[in-house]
Length: 250
Image 1 (cartoon, rainbow, N blue to C red):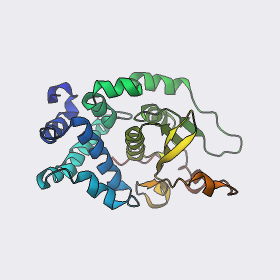
Image 2: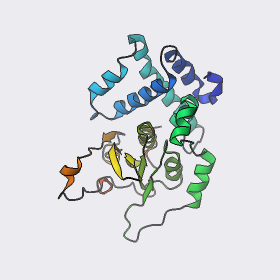
Image 3: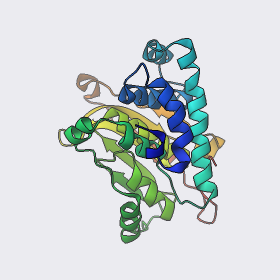
């Protein structure tokens, strides 16, 4: 893939990324980069996992990962400064870099941003009688575009995303975190209701002002028997007052 195939705001990222693809598969590099992003904001993640993930890269190549993150965040800031309501940089890059065979196999054709905006505007939330937070879910979230769009029109909801593809889970978690959304993203097979992991997104945002991701701990089936249902994290992360501007990293 050539940089000119990317939107203008992502071409600097594409040029730098291209240097890593001379020796490595683009899809593999992108997957490792997304995992790298997660580790920067999820201190509870196993650090040994990131070391093993990056061991195939030379020292020079490893040093490029923080630079790639900086360029990505600069691209996001540019979009937000220009008045963009939300922006899915990772999903855009994923669509371009990922092999077509995998996209077709997984059925991953992401919803165009314009459709996401339209769907959000057609589905306004219904306030709860008790004043509690609105709960919103997408059981096949992809890179989280529908959730980002919804939050841009109706901020303050507790949002849950789920997907069978782990890289989509990580992209959604990172996207939600940067957009100041609180909720969770679950790595699961929705049809079989099998859960393998995921992340709490910004669970301490309105207490500390710091964005973060907290890995979900999934217990084995035998460990779950006779245990009470865990308290919803939403009760620990109240939404800001309606008149308060939603948090944004940018």
